[in-house]
Image 1 (cartoon, rainbow, N blue to C red):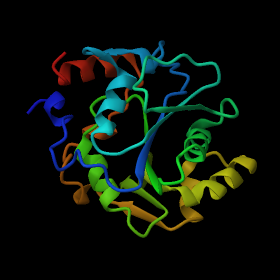
Image 2: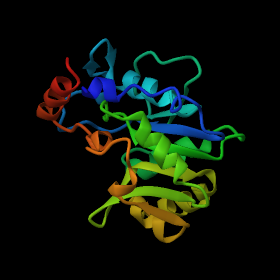
Image 3: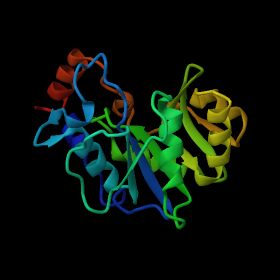
Image 4: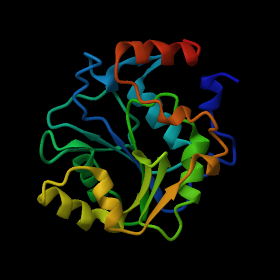
Length: 215
């Protein structure tokens, strides 16, 4: 099975879990890539468009968080676009911006970056399924959490804002303040190879991902 095929959700995965959306962080500086990751071509679409499309098969609504003044490729009309309030504050600022504009009917959101074009929809569905009763649900490997492959409840927003006010900008600080579930790779059955975690930082990463996706 190719990575492209892995990116297609099954009919069961395409059901939107109740009250769960997604937040896609697209405002990174892309220094090592040398170009905006959101605009990088990935087959017939851009990388951001692909991540949004894959997520839309699993969760809804989707919020895309951009940097101030950042141009984005065209996105579906139902995608909510917002912006970081302050520059250079890292992913915690993007998480705040995304959580703040989620509709009141949405209880939680799966948070990811825009540079994971090999995202597996089943991974997202399983993380959402494991998140019941917790404020944050994050994959952890060898003691290292992956905060941009995680589910956050709206209830964590005041804690995120407090950390930002204290200049404690690492998302891991949040996990000591809220009910957090650390998910092990063994609990993820839909993405055994963890393609979802392959964020692309350099042109070599990009070329390898294109090849793995069959482009």
